[in-house]
Image (cartoon, rainbow, N blue to C red; front, top):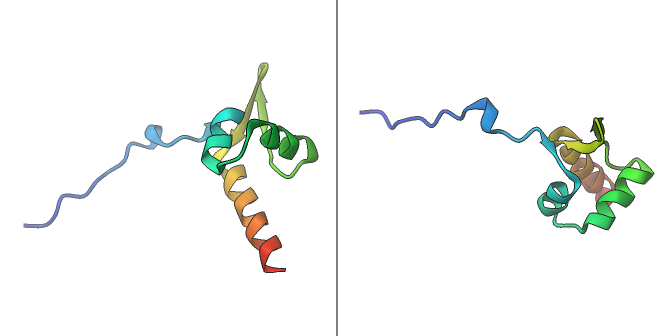
Length: 71
């Protein structure tokens, strides 16, 4: 009998993070996140008055850090 496969609902995947959530994901402080946003090292979008950080931007920032570490 084959093992059951786990199918994840696409709506369960977080696509946008608030700055405090992104800080937890990256293990950084909120003020560091806002500095990264201000300097353009971390992308964000705005929905109304809410600043949101796409999950892809977090992955891009990690890739940037890895590239800088390799140099």
